[in-house]
Amino acid sequence: MPIINLQEITSICNGVCHMSVRSLRLGGLATGLDIDQMVKDLMRVERVPLDKLRQDRQISAWRKQEWRDLNKSMAFFRDQVFTMRLQSTYMTKKAISSNASTVSVTALSTAAEGQYILTVQQKAKGAYVASDAALADEKDASGNTKKLKDQFSLAEGTIISFTLEGSTKNQDGTFKQASFSFNVDEKTIYDVVNEINQAGLGFKAVYDNANDRFVLMSPTTGSAQRIKVVADSSNFLSGMDGQNPDNKLKLKITAGTEYTGQDAKVKLNGSAYDFASNSFTLMGLQVTLNGGPETLGEPEVSANISVSLDSDAVFNSIKGFIEKYNEQVDKLTGKLREERFKDYPPLNDEQRKQLTDKEIDLWEEKAKSGLLRNDPLLDSIINRFRSMTTSSVSEITTGYKNLADIGIKTGNYTEGGKLFIDEAKLKEAIARDAEGVMNLFTQTNRKTNESWERKGIAYRLYDEVNSSIKKIVARAGSATLASDVDQSFLGKEIQRFDQRVKDMERRIQRKEDAYWRQFTTLEKAMAKFNAQSTWLANQFSGGNK
Image 1 (tube, rainbow, N blue to C red):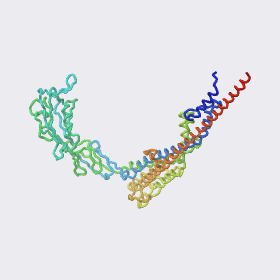
Image 2: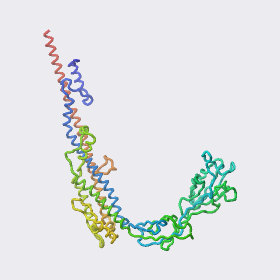
Image 3: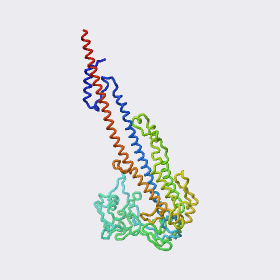
Image 4: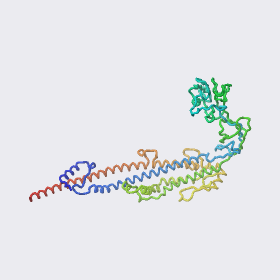
């Protein structure tokens, strides 16, 4: 085993003393002490306040996230409450057609209840012209697309030209025209289709390769849709001039003639109406014509339509609202009453290293529990919700004044203000006075400083949810804000924790450096002492020779 000279030890210690204590730390060479472990043990004690500070910071961060999660659910609930503010929610109508296969009808909330007779005189159609017979196949035996020359047996070098006009108008009000020219040696039927479609005339060209037909058609129906051949000098479009039809597109079309669509013509209780489409809204009825005469003069088709209040839809809207209200109350009261486990503080880094991922998750589940227990703000929100839903609506002179009047009551106090429905009584209230039910939820005169007691249940609750959301944002900030600009109560608290952690980390580092300096001084002194002892021993040993 090699022998270490004590003078070398002294030299090493002197060197360490003049180095940065953070760059290289050597201990125990002269003293034989495990200085590194001793410093770690000392610093573990020093870091106890820092670990506690970090735990407090983590608790604030968890509490902040708890509030933000509640705010998300509150925002979602607010959107549902907003629907209950709308009168249309309570005016849902249903329509029954006696001839639904021909005339299908859906009633809007604006439809007047009553009986209607809808008579279809003519369905709407678009402008449409197509090949009167199959054209020659556009593919050759190898499956390649033929040029126009080969498909239509045209002479080499032939130039096909024509001018079309559609329903699109120019700025001066005239109809837009487009002229086309094709060299049959170079172009195919698909080139013809593409160039027509790129002209923006208000109609489309289609080549049905399954049936070898060429079609010009408007995208929609109505009398405003039109197709016109202004010029067809090569007679390529129609083939109706007595020449060889196999050289043409065989369209049933004549140059100079307009081919237009037609409007739907109907009568509602004897009054006549025209519509560009077969789907239209008339007197609050959304009507779709599935059948009927193609042109005027054909036998007309009628349907008897009955419109009434959809009581089931109104009931389901109110029931769905109450269910969502109870879900929100459950979330709030659940957090208010959630058990707190103080024996489960946030884990520090060393503790995390000693646990599995599952053990960490189970620990943190306990550590996060009850962070909002008995929170005054949360308690006030729940109490305000209870007041908004149980108090009567003032200035309602007739009809229903509170939810209890229509069969909706709160349970006992331990249930946190949840609402319970007497379904039979609610259905009876809707059937007897649907407007009174609507007013109970939607009454407002829209004054800025209107007392909440005068507002309907949905209006006052919507305002209260908005107010609660603002209070929570003041407490925990918004998820859209960066942490460094979060000026909420908890945001500022976390920022203060972060600063205190930084300050304490600097103090602890200085303390650790001080410990190392002290032990390094001890090493140096011990090395000198050992060197002196060795010198004296050598002196005595030399004198005995």
